[in-house]
Image 1 (cartoon, one colour):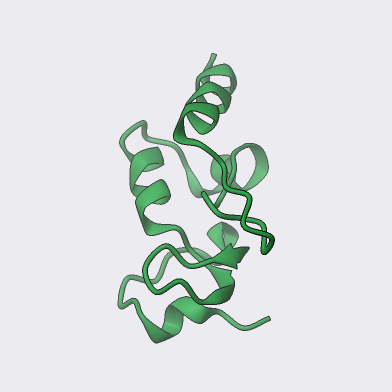
Image 2 (cartoon, rainbow, N blue to C red):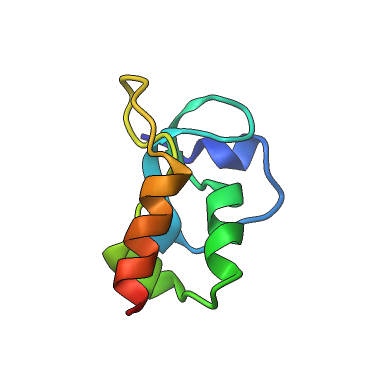
Length: 82
């Protein structure tokens, strides 16, 4: 798939943070960054490598409409930062 964020964002993140799902800005499906989720992780000083290897990269990673909840993501983040 192609990076759909190139169509709607001027804030390019590391390719480590790309994942296939639904873009949080434009709703297109493909490889994209979840800018809001990345900003959330940045508040905790989490590196790109840490996000890539241990954390969900998208709130909406599935193309079937199933979304991660912020509660679940917060629980994963909390357990990984211990």
